[in-house]
Image (cartoon, rainbow, N blue to C red):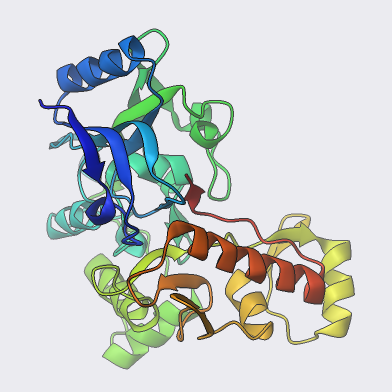
Length: 339
């Protein structure tokens, strides 16, 4: 393994922002990873672990060591005739992993098709879409404790999953690096989640009445491709903001003024689509300089010209946050990690 200096990260972040790392290492196994971490400790360097680069916005170059996790490998172990444990290492591409599971008729991840990024970052965000979240099939993950340099294991409960949240984004932030993730998937009696309106509509469009897990995946891919820009064509990080959750009392006040506001009850709270709030503030398709809100999905901020800096994108997102607060009294939270 070679540690490189002044390494461009433009092709390693899906926004396509031109920044560099003072030091850069691509690690392919645990030995490489420990060596790179030791190099950073000896040289008193801050470390940034990079997966698929799909959930990060660089606002400046990184003055420490960027470690690109390229750990690869997938294994499986059958529990019984209807359940299988599938383990994927952190560097596996998420969508390719989902498709591999579907090719083997393993169910549970089909609603999470075409989400950008790598397997290793999926538990950090508790990624979710169309009624499914990672926590629904997650069994455990192996991590490297950066303090003790020992490999540890976190089960579902210990990860303390929440909406786009986990222990790794809160008190465990910066303390661990995820090495692999294990999921429990079905092999025969699949429990399909097609209640999400867009999936139902898409399946009807395909003329499918009794969908398979593969059909659900195709529907999800079709929906996402129709709404979301391809980061290989237009720089973006997918959904830039979390859908806000507000108290029932606060929602009632907003609903009186905006009766058409879409909402999803969530216990004693109410979740509101961030994209709808942003669109109502006039941002959908709006461009300022090199940055724009996507014309088909206001929740997505894009590097419209390909020449945007991270600061331009960040400032654009701040303007959106301020306008939503002014109109609705609701503060949006960035889902993307800001560096």
